[in-house]
Image (cartoon, rainbow, N blue to C red):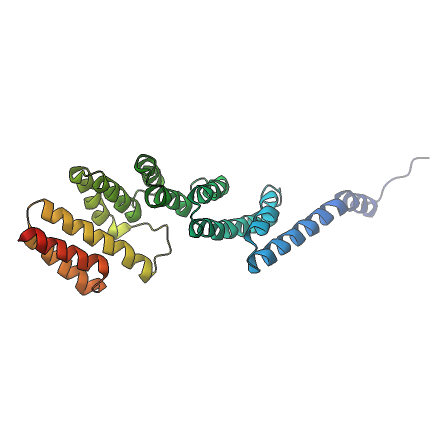
Length: 239
């Protein structure tokens, strides 16, 4: 004899078919792992935090994956600076590569890679390529224009530096910043920008313009060592 299913039976069977005990367990385990990674991060064990968080980024659960990604990036940020403080720039670059695998267009890791290639490794060619990559994604990056100008000057090529100095100034109104645009960050960038711009003014034949610009920079930023040195160079070359 055939038994007709009531609407209550159908609703109950449908509900039972969607109860996922394994899914609940997997999410609880993933959340617990995220908690553990966060504790490692808080305790300063950044390598452990990274190793725990990275596998969780691949999970299909967007909530857990997003939290794990934030933890992994925070750990990588600390590990990069640790490596640099220990004079291990190549290790820092490997951490940056891991960061970029999580954020292929990440502004900060892209710029940080260029800076490490420029300042820590002195690889001007690779640094040039890295800064151009920043500008492909962030075309109003004052920091990247400044970096390219500095590289050109390091090569002894002021003519090549000129357009990047100009574009650095032109980008200010709509500037994009990889670093948190704090007063400290901006002070450092503008100090370098005024410095190389004054040098460019002098190279273009006007010590007076260079001097006036440096005086304005000192009025805005204070009498820093960089600006004091620039003023000294201006006076020496003017004699």
